[in-house]
Amino acid sequence: MSSTICAKQMLVTVLMFLLCTAGGLVTTRAEAAEARGADESPLAGESVFTDVGPDDPYYEAIYGLWDLGIVTGYSLGLDQYEFRPWAEVARAQFAKMVVNSLGIPVSEDDVATFVDVQPEPGEDPLYPDNYIAAAAKHQIIRGYSATNFGPWDPITRAQAVTLIVRALVGWSNGDLEDPSDAYQTEGIFADFDDPDHGRNMQLAEYNGLLNGLLFDDDGRWDPWRPANRAEVAQLLHNCLLIL
Image 1 (cartoon, rainbow, N blue to C red):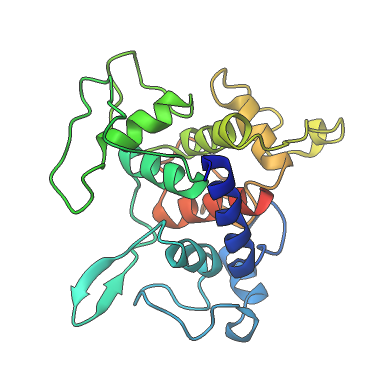
Image 2: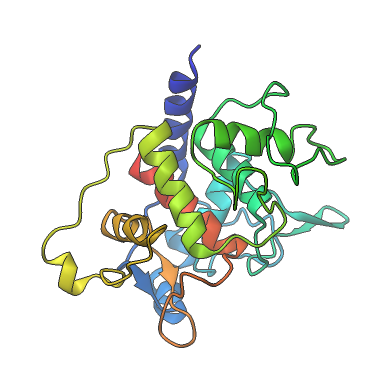
């Protein structure tokens, strides 16, 4: 079975479990919580994580990815787990999440060329080096240089969005529409002209990849802040829904 067929079958499964996040591109925590109740959630009553319940604004995204085995939690013992939604995500961790979300093939034959990416002991023998190599092979991730990736640096929101846009367009042949003329005056990131991430942030906003994300306390969604686990779950949730 081809990798493309496997990816499409995964996406069909996703659409059976996930509910598209209601609301605008970015909303406040209070608005998101009010819009989502336990009775409205397709996963109500299935809380696995002690720190993520049905009233959490990222509930559907987190549990949808957990159900597919894309995200996991931290054991507290006695069959209790935390998700730690506000913990920062390392670049190596995000590479694995993207590879698993899109069904990108990964094996020990995928060898990382970055000198700062080495095999690590753990339950997954492919993590982190083989996941990073697989993502790099398909031009989804790029290092700070040809030899330096910074696997344990926190991934910024802008970097996370860029990786997902590359994965959608390059690997999954996703059809992202160009922003309309009206977006140039209405879009939150219409004036974000960073040479590496500006265009990707605009594509992401216009096509719904930023749906459900919460404003920061200052009323913005700062693209240079480290992305946390809850935000990453929402971005990947939206990515799969677009596909």
